[in-house]
Image 1: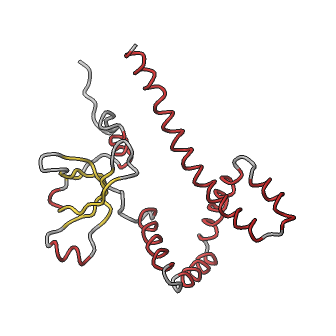
Image 2: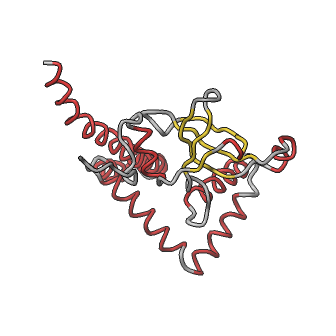
Image 3: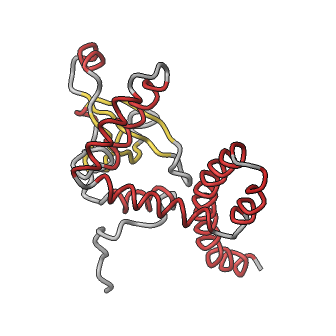
Length: 211
């Protein structure tokens, strides 16, 4: 019975986790659309609210609209006119107290993470954790701030240490460059290795030939 139960878990666990992650992502998109619709219903005349609510209740419409808006925004931002409007929008936002701090910080982080020219999450490394002699996989996210680097002296790097089996949480650490060991495996392969708690080897790992 134990053998059959484990075999069944191996079949259903990947599917269940995949569905859970996709459901979470889709619910976030649908929640964004729902918040916008709620704001519109608060300011629109009462005669229009039933029709708007019926539209809101259509299955999947929120997800499709949010995805379409994101795609349309990307197309708009890729041309000269769109870039001009975005710069104007940034100037307006950066003059609003409190909002400017949050907006500029999030914009800088997202630009670093999603930029094709950035170095964040481009390299998997080994770092000693939680003590010397023990090692774990982390991802290089950049270099320390000037003040931090000046106080530390030796060259250091910023790394993100994900947890397992949920790599969306983890720790931000600053470690000496001399203590890290760069890996040849890709970031995707390293993530699979972490999520599987080390049971799934990277695809690039050479497999010994059968004798």
